[in-house]
Amino acid sequence: MNSSLQEAINDQIQAEFFSAYLYLSMSAYCTESNLTGFAGWMRLQAQEEVSHGMRLVTFMQNRGAPVLLQALGEPPHDFGSPLEIMQASLQHERSVTDRIHKLYAMAVEAGDYPAQVEFQWFISEQVEEEATIDEIVQRLKMFGTDGTALLLVDGQLGDRATEEDAE
Ligand code: FEO
Image (cartoon, rainbow, N blue to C red; front, side):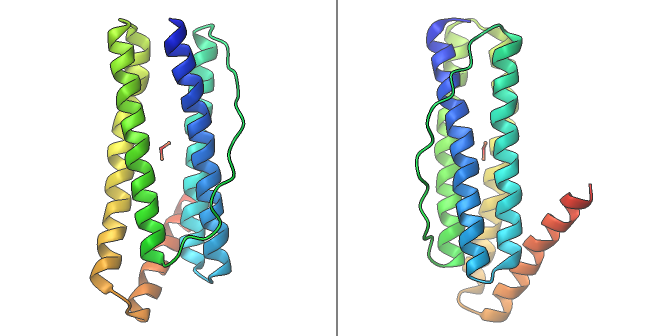
């Protein structure tokens, strides 16, 4: 694997683990705000981000490329309203998507077919993540500040956490 691609994937490993940190911080904030369903959902997101980071670690190792872990920054601790939390998640995922697209373009440029296949998985994953979060944002916007509706969304997000825990 060429060295600039190795460096970019190591940067992406950091970005995935930072995403986990960010979602875990959102989860903690939601727990403190008594949004139990949101908190469970964010906690699962954090676990997914860890699995993305691990996936890239394995990919690098399978290719005989060095894994150089980098420091993680401190995530924010205050995220505002439930709508603002979800909007921040969506914005974050869009920035991750941009990163993945750049990585894919680099892999194409380098003629690195295995890396292209690997990033295709991430491209599809990002489409899914953005769609899921956008749906929640739209629902929250629709309900405005209606407390009952918010509790309903919180319950639905909590269901995902319970379902995936049972799998
Ligand atoms: Fe690892 Fe949320 O993308």
